[in-house]
Image (cartoon, rainbow, N blue to C red; front, side, top):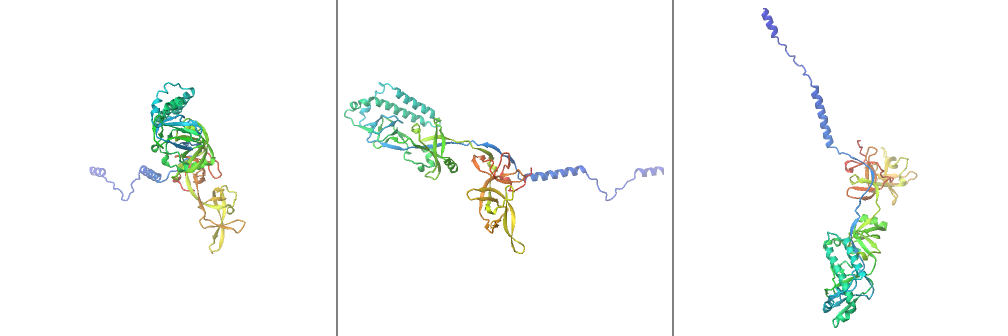
Length: 469
């Protein structure tokens, strides 16, 4: 019996109570909660536009002011009276007076043979050596390895100079050398600078130019060489009759208009770094494109051999507040006259009296505070926040019965200032800009100041949106 009792104790089974609650794992619950929170944060992060701040600082822009222009002068082309060998007696780029002998035409060619060897027996004068030296120095300063064609032009120019010197040495014995041969003496029809090349631009005015004229691949320059045969009626030289000349450069209309308002600007010629002052005027070409005409009253002879002239405009460096272009936005406003705006001492705010209707249909008025964002001196009107008013609202003046209907709208260029924790539009006045930044005026009444914070990307916010710092 003892054994039996012992057996029963050892095999006693304790039943599990029905309906008992299992123990909760607090660690798993905490991990799950954190996971859900992180998931919500990630979803919110990728579905929310990120607003970046930008601190406004003073700065300047490196604006490209170098342009390739076309030189236009008062040029008269002289044609050859008869076919034959030509011999020049005036240097290319030398001034001649009315009636001076410029060249002769040997119709038979025998004079050319008789004159051979004259130059070898002659000595160069100091003046002739200076002419050679000056021509070589000018070529070296203006040489561009990307334009190898200039080498051949220089060669032809030197050949003309040599021919002129050679011809001058036997000019005294020309009658003896010519004998019975037909020699035509050609004299300058007017006073001016002689040049022995043509290109078809001689009669062009600034208003005749098109964008095609500025492409060098379309350009052809014809040089007349001494001691060679020239056909009858062919252009043989041209004479520039005035020291006044123009350089016309292509330019966007807005910038050309700004420079025209200055009247006079300083210009540096890239060929020899010579600086001069030019009168400026905006013109429209034959294709409707905008050009800036730079007018000079000196140094024409220095560039007598050039049709294309590279110039740099020396402008005063504009400094101001440097703003990324991504921060700039355009916003629309109502335009209101000053008598309808009441100044109650709130900076940047005004009060208007708007007509309204009560519940019983009675006409009444209400006062509304509106933001002021700019003032137009020309029209004497204020730019007023368009969110507080509606087109067709009737406004009353404070001291009389005059009324006006809200209808006129206009736009301003500006940025969103976030100093106060929300996107507040501020007008800006752009001085210059490039592909990334704009320089704007500082300390304007309705604009920005140094160290203000603005929204870097204007597309990422809405007007008056609160910004989480």
